[in-house]
Length: 268
Image (cartoon, rainbow, N blue to C red):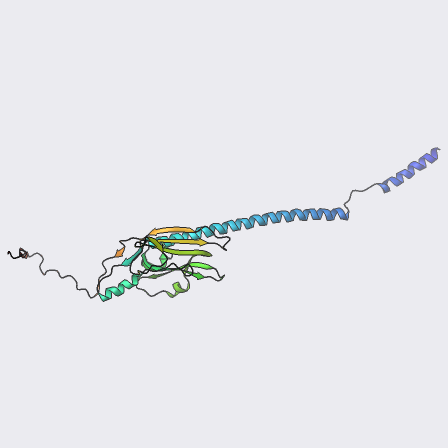
């Protein structure tokens, strides 16, 4: 009995190590862990991409609004400095006045504005023209390489030929323009007009609307401005080269004597 019990104990000792269960992952568990880890990474990447895209859209929208405001500010500042020349009688002076023509059209499809203004030194591209602060400015819409509309500005110093570089590479004030309209206050009708025919006279007020956006659905609220133009801003002191200079007396220290009395009307 004792021998049989010892053999059973020895056999059990031999069987126990072989039957012990070792800790390990099965192939199914490894694949499941990989799938869970991939799902977590995908969710993190999707969240990060969404945040990055939202940030880029918000920055682009803020930049679009800021650029629209800067464009409106540039147009407003130019209108505040708009000038025209008084109409003298001589032919040469009339030719000089033609350089100051105020040309404008509020057509929604082809808005156009061209006039002469005295600009501050800090005006865009002011350093390109040095000290020539009186320049002709032209604002209009053009198509860009994407097919959208952009508001461009060209500048030319007064009495100078247009610069080729300025004509080919104008200053882009605003991109993705959805609306740019111009209106001019008519004193006679007391209404806003989309056309201004008096090219030798400034309108009392100019109103414009500027809206930008990548599409009509993403269009920003329009920036509106009403700019009063100086009614007494006509340039004076323009003298014709044919005008004779004033002649001073040869000896101004000599007293010419008393003036003769004015003639009196005959008594009846």
